[in-house]
Image (cartoon, rainbow, N blue to C red; front, side):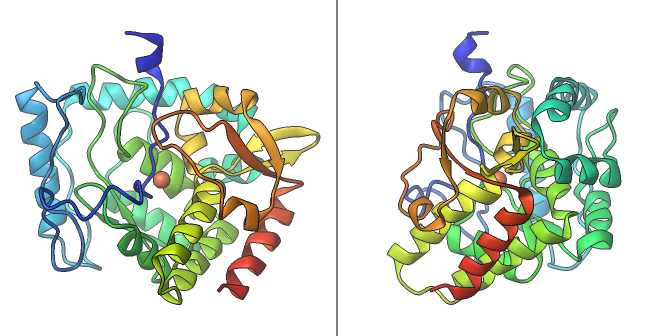
Length: 298
Ligand SMILES: [Fe+2]
């Protein structure tokens, strides 16, 4: 595998904000995408069994009734092994690169190393800590649909896992990113509150330009946020803590002081490591800064 291919892209449940409204990607009446489409360069494009399983898992989201327990996804033994491979690659990097709040949540949520946890069980655990719950989606959803659901304490989560041929790479958010990134962090009451406030701010937002700015704030905090702890840079962003490659690249990024107004105007590329990150002086100062910003929005 090429070094470049081992990079887990900056996957996020916040999609490329220009990539939607594609007529070839039907959406449900509630905005949740119905069909799985893989690009020809997707690692699983030629694997018919994988594509069939992706469709089967997408069907779960298609027929899901909000609030009901999430039906279990039909993972294979090979996919459970893939989960172990990714978890084992991430665990030591979490100890060195993840912030204390994340490490506390990891212990509290205590996700299985052996098997891919089902959304149903993780959702129950997260809900017990912060009231947030996970609901399934078949793939990327429109930014407003994804972000507004946060106001209801609902995190729209993909359920499939990346293709086994590229354990440390996925061109799209998968269950590794959702669970080891977002779900773990949503056990944190401060992080859950910030997610809710993002959703409420989006609800108050009418213009596309303002929605894009909020989406960038989300990107540079909830997805790719970092803080200082005892003089070291530590990650709390879901896109960082769910990717070994991103955690390594974090050390080479240009660090700027957390300035949410600047972050709201900072362009980003979802297909490469993040070259610019916004760093708060502490987790607590990040929380207060972002909370105040969102409460004052617009
Ligand atoms: Fe994400």
